[in-house]
Length: 276
Ligand SMILES: Cc1cc2nc3c(=O)[nH]c(=O)nc-3n(C[C@H](O)[C@H](O)[C@H](O)COP(=O)(O)O)c2cc1C
Ligand code: SF4
Ligand code: SF4
Image (cartoon, rainbow, N blue to C red):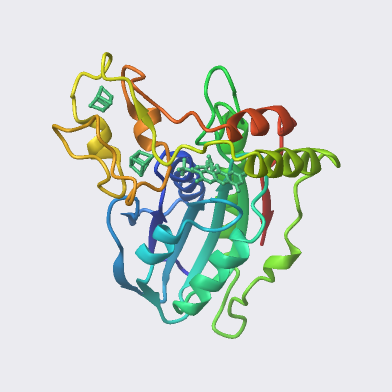
């Protein structure tokens, strides 16, 4: 099959899914690339059958972010090949990859390859690092090589031997330290039962805020209004931390007690995995 165009779609509040998707796209080496950034707007397109689509999304609580799913609703195809990619913060991705594969299949795509990558956790800070700096050079090189393999797979396809859907369950799972998840789950249950207060939105240090409006422009849900950046609409906030990581003076923080648990239990580096 000769790929005539490549669509790179991602929902990526803190930029790690975007970086992974772009590196995979580099490996495909297609001259005709279009980008669909679902972080701030929904996609609406009917993808041609000779087009390849790469879709990358972060993992939230072991699932796809509901807003990302919603923004994919009108991205449709009639048998065009797609690559499903989820990016998680070194804890676990659980149901997310299967959900993405089902979403793509339901929208008319044929999922011919899939991968899982690790990105710096949205809750990671200098004091409590969780997969800090990822995807790093090693991850992005893996992503580019994965893109090359996807292109090679597509080049072998013919009308008589068309692509078949991959069985997502066959992807290799990352190595998980046997007690890490147990310690994390027990710690999380203790916090919930002990009624530890969970922040509903990031906090703002008004003495630091420059009212530059950057957080308002980064927010995928318009939970912050330019000019009133000290206020966050808790009914809109999805706790993605785009505003926290993007604030130039560190005026926004998301002091969730989960960060300590995650930093303590998921230090061991997990590796990206692929399925072709
Ligand atoms: C609300 C929320 C829930 C998350 N849940 C998980 C999770 O279940 N497992 C995990 O490993 N990482 C989890 N993460 C971390 C993100 O998956 C990770 O940081 C990802 O790289 C963010 O993608 P982005 O940079 O494209 O926004 C979560 C992050 C947020 C904001
Ligand atoms: S990005 Fe930071 S400094 Fe700029 S308005 Fe938002 S909170 Fe204030
Ligand atoms: S206000 Fe909430 S939804 Fe908006 S960028 Fe910040 S954490 Fe994300």
